Amino acid sequence: MRLQIKHGTVYALEKDGSADELVETNVRRFGVNNVKLVPGFAPATMEKLPPADRIFIGGSAGALLEILQAANQKLKPGGWLAATAVTLETGPVVLGFLEEKGYQQVEAVSVTVAEARRVGRSHMWQGQNPVVVVSGQKPE
View 1 (tube, rainbow, N blue to C red):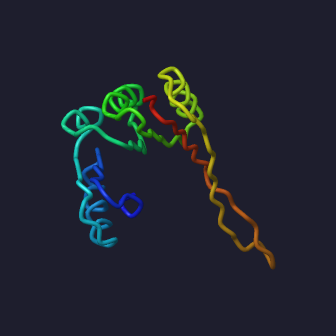
View 2: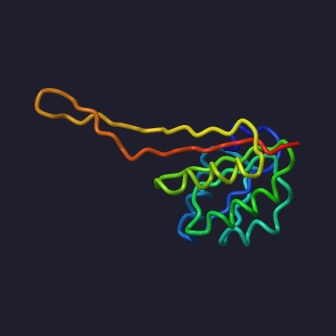
View 3: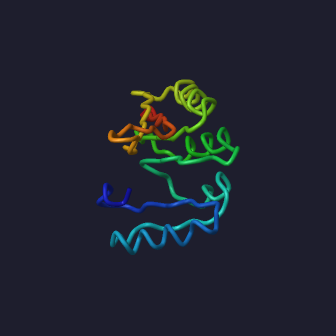
């Protein structure tokens, strides 16, 4: 994400301590210097962060509505909120929340990745589970 954001700070909230090292490794690997790791569970960890222009939710550990509410409070007017959904239940919850709060340009996009596997003398596409990305812009 930092490679796309030339100015500002990216706050990487991570609930899983074992993933902290991966975040730090990737920060070094990609040579970015303004990614700040914030260990702990959202939405509690969000309280100490400054207002945001963009918020990306990659998982909720069962606290989706609370995280969406905290994100809505932290997001500046005109800012963008995006969330991924890997379950059938999550996408509609995010979509409904954004629409209820009056977000603009709300959309959902399903992304599926497939890899080719050899089957006899041919190759067959084997799809992975789809990921839905729901996004919208907070009203001014």
